[in-house]
Image (cartoon, rainbow, N blue to C red):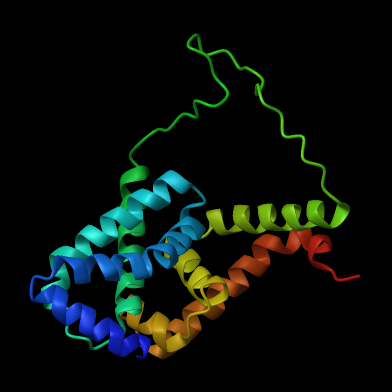
Length: 196
């Protein structure tokens, strides 16, 4: 059975009140949903919260799903909306890391050092990933989401257009602008991206 046909059967059953069918949909997509949310947030707890919120929204809106797009595409749209909603809320909050502070507010050194040895290539890869993530963090959330959808999740232009409810031409132009903005942000670290 193809994935789309399998999804259609599960969705129809879930819309009819079959809780097991909805649970099967969740199990089928929870890993992909979490990976996408984690790539957007870079925080496992926040990603888990976003995915939980997304599946609650899916459950609430499932009877309105008509199959005009793939279920996975619809889920990406919901996750993206949950992420954007969270970012709006975060702008009004002040967060403090508990990792490096005591009750008195003094800085403390981490108690368990990371002793994993790594070769030079792993260090370079890590440096590149860090630089790219810092650059992505500086970008508007919608650009970051589009870049992750296309380059990490490997969604097509059409799937991104469906997920974000945009025309394909708009997706292509915004994705191109996002790539140019990312390239500009990475220009000061271009030596990390040169191939030897």
